[in-house]
Amino acid sequence: MIRRVSAAAVRHRHVVLLLGLLVAGVNAAAVGFTPSLGQVLFPPLALLALAVLVLSVIAMGIRPAAFIVLAPVPAFATPAPAWKVFFVLGFLGPASASAGAMVRSARADIVSTLDVVLTISWLALIALLLVEAWQGHGVQLRPDGVRHRWVLGSLTVPSQALPTTHVAPGADRPSRLRMAFGEPLLVRRRGIPWSWNALRTDSVDARFLAAAIRHYVGHPEHRAAIGSDGEYRRLLAQLADREGGREPGHTEV
Image (cartoon, rainbow, N blue to C red; front, side):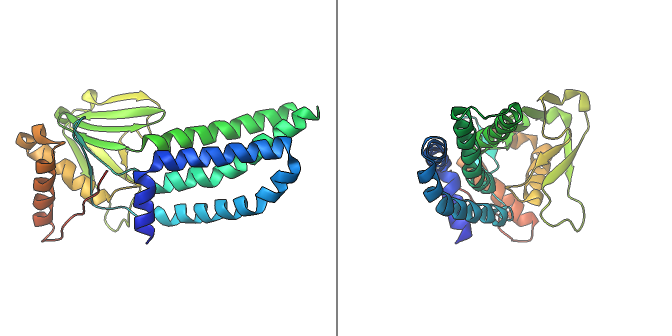
């Protein structure tokens, strides 16, 4: 059930996030201009925010052995993390209440500089998380290498850099996949990368991602087909054979 809800939230994340923003805007306006209405809205919104945050914690453990096929790029991308969508929704309520309270204080001419700084900082953090959840895809396997992108930066590892990956023995669902580079000077980092030498695996099975990278490093003849449905089926079959018949999953857009 949780997996289905998470998959639906990811698939329709733009609509879900827009609805969350709409509710947050109504709540901010109610708190700022109609305090009595804000008090009525507070209990159900607080319970909803708590439930969504609990759901985000549960969704952190959902890491399928699957990619999303992005034919226009072309690329195989890790699924968008459902927990980020839920996390943003859970914090939109408190953030909108803080914004509304600041508006109410400003109307009463009792707002302080500290209140403004704290509220703006809080809203900026929520905006950052919102953009990250909206963009969705973190790691992409492309014909020319691996790209890891997040809202403040990116890490691009060309195939010529010969990246090697390793999951620590005994690690249970690690949130990052560390890499070593045969040609580190070819690696490009822009902005503020999430990590200098690791890929985020909070929405994909780390061992599956590592196996896929190793496969294309060792089989350059298949790189040109990355991003096609046929190549994705071939990759799943190849990796399943290596894992003794255990078939990786498939994720739809």
